Image (cartoon, rainbow, N blue to C red; front, top):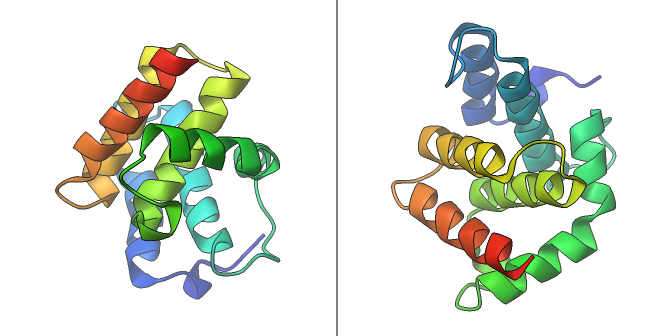
Length: 138
């Protein structure tokens, strides 16, 4: 796998929180997988040679299509200008939506919770807006 010391301090804290306090319940494995995939996707943006888990690999496999969805749903925001954490959350959620691994509402709710916890003050609203538009267009 990869060393958590190689991650930025904010993502090291993210790993600590995953082990202590998931958003929904203490032992929600689905939430833990998403947080792990979020950290992997975020760090993959800086180091492309990292080993990744299944969810992160599935997201990267669909990256071209996912980025196109983001471009059509967030027309005011070029991908290069989107906050990297928000972008990782959007990519993860859109990959799950295209794979249909869980109900749409669950995926969107989890993405919003991740944005509230790890993004900026405006992240949750931005993620909600982009995913809402994407679901309408799907």
